[in-house]
Length: 313
Ligand code: SN0
Image 1: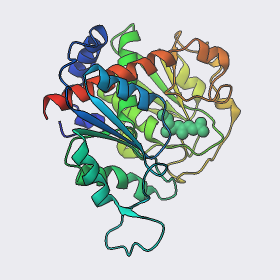
Image 2: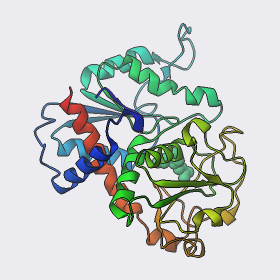
Image 3: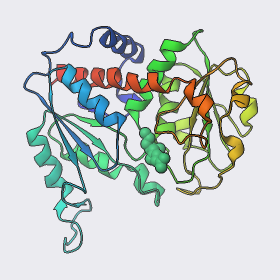
Image 4: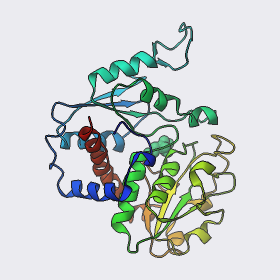
């Protein structure tokens, strides 16, 4: 396996879900697989869960881990071809990525979108540069437009807690003071589709996600209608895709409350974290949710992705 940047890199989702559950039962069953192998984690943006869960996952497989916080600890990288580098950038991504990959057997990279230019962000400049110049397999630790490790952990969490084969899963937009990426909702939609869930997306007008991702998933602008009969409620803020990167609404009426949850089929509440309390959802909703289970599952899903890559090195 040369890359893990979206659900489309997974040959058999159901198989992967059951293998991730096996790792949870026996975390150290493959503790020699990663012996003398090194994982490099490259962060252009902050991280708590991704950093710690992926590092722990690597240790469970016997790997060594190096972490680089680019921008803080490293040089400013140049991405364009043929540039006269007499400005603020100090090293071209071409050398930087190739060099890093000389020291690692697998690399992970996190790079958020600029949220200024939609074409640029959806071209995945940084992720594509890593895929092109790395000599070793690459894992997305959240790219400009997707967060596959989160989507995988979320699908595992839904799978473990569902009471029926095809539960109703509602992805609801929720308010937030800042402009946030579409990466998490994009990945959530793709993994729920891939896992065969009955997914409904709800958001205010103007927050439509990319059509090539949503496809024929039902969308409603009426949150209460969406919540009726829901088995899972996944809240997330994202900035507009149409009016790219803009915050069009801060309507507190979209916050998930206990009253809203009462409209559902005793749904379990989910969020990728970090969550702003009493902005996205109330304290009571968060305190009675699956958020910690989701975060725990980040470990087992990351460990499976690493295991798959180690097996094909
Ligand atoms: C990121 C996002 O993509 O929405 C990472 C989620 C895993 N979240 C944030 O940047 C939250 C920042 C904030 O100010 O609350």
